Image 1: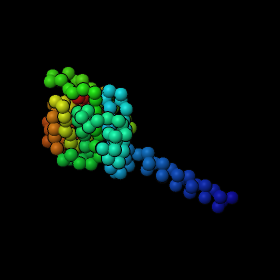
Image 2: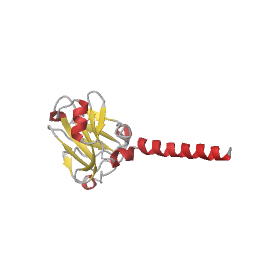
Image 3: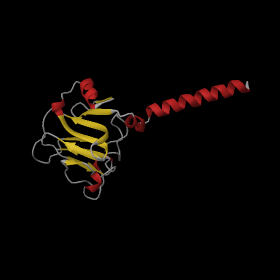
Image 4: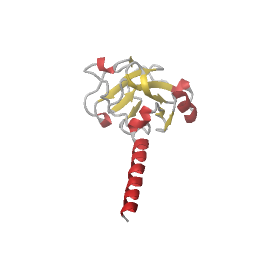
Length: 162
């Protein structure tokens, strides 16, 4: 009986370890998974590379408005943000994502370290979820968000695009 309980406990702990590793957001980034976030449909598609994620999402690269990276100098895992049209010249917050903890590609809350925008778009980061707390300036590109304003590396909880 005792041997059976030890075996069952060992199996359960092993299963929990495997499930915990596979389900944790950090694991997705460590495996180099990249995600495409469709701001029109709210769908998130992840794959081993950005190209594979774009292909799996059925989205053309011409729809990319921004890329956020979890490493400085545009390195590490990437979230590629896409939408159906280019941004307008004014800062009118055309698209937004209120909670970076939930992007299906893992928890990106307080993880973004660099950003690039395309198609006349800029981004604005918010310290808290749901656009609460301090806000960054509108950013076109930054290889190191630690140098922007009061330091925005690994700080964003929500994001707006314009």
